[in-house]
Image (cartoon, rainbow, N blue to C red):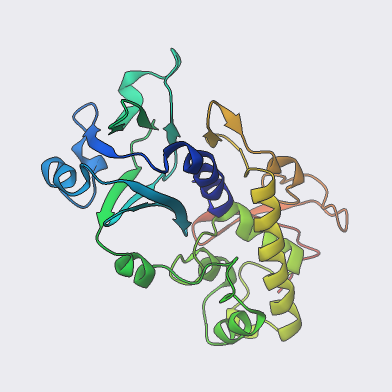
Length: 272
């Protein structure tokens, strides 16, 4: 599933292409009305038709399209992609929705596994209550992280994956951040020292910003624009590198199960 850097990459790609356009309608494809998560197709179009796009941003893993009245949100989930044009490789059966604009251009939602969704909200209150702090915002401070870790009896991996705690992190960047901070994913939050908490804070912010600068991480499914892939994969230290040597201590990286997720650790660097 695309995480914060991948979603931010998509946002930066489509923003200059669609800001200023007016939505004509949004048409589900292949009888897949479930792609419109909050309303029926008729209701959805009554709400968005004729509205102009003021800006495109991100909240957690959601793409937030700011309309002149209301918000259109898109969650890519596992395999969703937004395309400005279709090629002969883009099979119609893989499309779940098309956003038509008044200037006759379109934005295509392609989604092999059909888990991606579109939402309409009058405000962002619901989403803001659902999601936690943005890790690249001024609200994500060292003090905030340490305080909230101290108040948690949950394992670090489970806690960091919780979108209601920190918005936008997923399996890749949680594994990487814990490795950089030398923290075991099964360690309980309240047992983390101030020093290790500060290290985790710095690791999260550096990782996310560097990944954004490299247009995200492509492992299998993440592509944006006209088939572009993220470049951060070559900088991964532990994720996807089990049975290879740890870049820090040369021990073999292991893959274990934590929070029902495949989790990559160095058993020497990351011990409880």
